[in-house]
Amino acid sequence: MKKKGIPDLFLFFLVLYLVLPIIATALYAFATKWNSTVFPEGLTFKWLKVLFQDADFIQAFGRSVLLSGGAVLLAFLFIVPAIFVVVLYFPKYEKWMQTIVVLVYAFPGVILAVGLIRTYSQFGVPMILAVLGAYVISIFPYIYQGTRNSLRNINAKQLLDAAELLGASKLQAFSKVLLPAVYPGLFVGALLSFSILFGEFVLINLVVGSRFETVQIYLMEKLSTSGHVASAVVFVYLVLMGILTLAISILTKQSKGLVKS
Image (tube, rainbow, N blue to C red; front, side, top):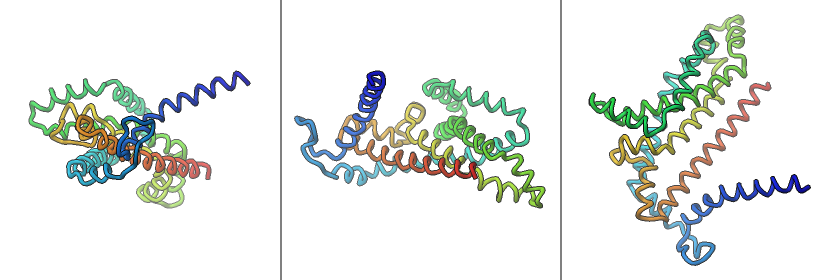
């Protein structure tokens, strides 16, 4: 009993250590005052109201959605078709894609930011486009792994061959047979990539900064002016990530159900 109790107690304190700051930040977003007591002295929606009435926040939120969503969209337009072709028809070249995955993890954000500034600023390329391109490459591992696993789980090559033997053209087999079978895995990769890019701070701050203010940059500015509003920003971010996590969980279950069926 003691051997089981000690790990359970350690896990409890570990979870408490990780969750307590999140709960405290969320409570501070609704606290009227929280100076001399253990719990907030009162609750209010004032700070959320102030936040959503701030045009700078709305614009920063829109920029984050636009930048993150645009990178995911570009990845699906250019990277996903390449993954499909390589995995299905040229598997011997898949090792090069795996090499790219490793290289993406090899570049820290600070080094990447300096490289982008030194390379593209001298050619007059808008730096936000350089950041967008870097975002597309940075989510390649998540898109690649999600797409590859989806194709392998359903035996995509055999599925396409069977559809073509039954009279379907290559386009029909791809659009009506393959895509419906793999779309949950693709959406999981898209949502995961979006959530990672939405919270990215180092690259966008170093390369563009306040010239293209995103939610993370807005949050850093508010930390020095209003702790309540900054906590409200974090709360909104946590709610958004919670929704995306729930969507990923549902789509993952759907993907597993399709594989079993």
